[in-house]
Image 1 (cartoon, rainbow over the protein chains, first blue to last red):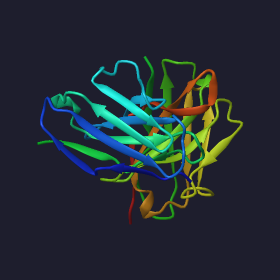
Image 2: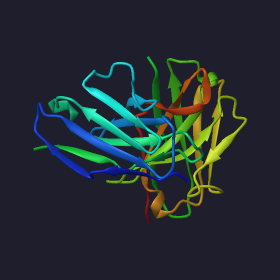
Image 3: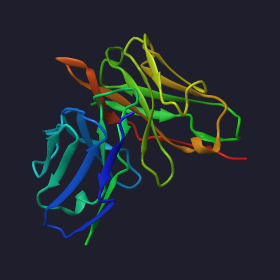
Length: 108
Length: 124
């Protein structure tokens, strides 16, 4: 099973600033990585797949990068609606599909 | 647009059973694999089960193998999760999710979109 590790657990950033979230895989997942956003009381929403491809309707301020075992989600200029929990997930080796434990992005 | 609506959650005693349903609309249900993913209160996401578009193959997390059964009725556009021998640690919001694939690489699939979830509470 591939273990996904996200850091930091909580990130405090001011609106308008840049946020950088990290995700590490226990072995290579190539570029087969997705990012999801989850707001309180809501279902997760797909942001990024293929490590760097934005899903339909996702604003350009969200970008993903990386391959192999190291990945990054960057939000270039934080809006109020971006404060949420973010999960990475690998789909290279399955089953199981595995998620990171999440990064909570909070307002500083 | 694609819509997934879960139902069937509730409170059940340890050792009991429950069947969840996920009604799909807005896409050709019989052409896509489907997942169940759960989230315990205040915790992260855990994949539970996957079924291929035609029901030919099913996969389970080790934590539910032998207790849960995923199935589908393509004539009713509905996905199911039969949960038996329930334990306290199965308490979670259960989401169904449609597989998302790149046609050139159908083996690679992620989750998009997700339903709103249904809460299962296992407690005496």
